[in-house]
Length: 122
Image (cartoon, rainbow, N blue to C red):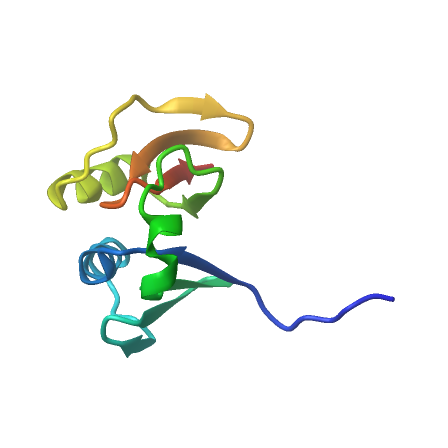
């Protein structure tokens, strides 16, 4: 049996909810599509929604350390250097250098909680 779905949503848990929502508001240059303060924010991106949520108190320890996360938020950009400058202006400069991948030039960066961002340009 095959199940059906209508859209995709990627979520990030954060115990620093307000800081992370502010970071993504500035990074994406848009306000959340929906916002429940200290609970949930959702951004509409091309092709996917990005949700940020505050874990319930009894789940906080599960999300306290995002180091070595297996998931990356990948954003295709039209100008990689401008995207790097934007992140740097936000106070989160990428720690490494631009590399060449099968899909083009890319660089890793990290949000305030340490979640990996991959910015890439074809």
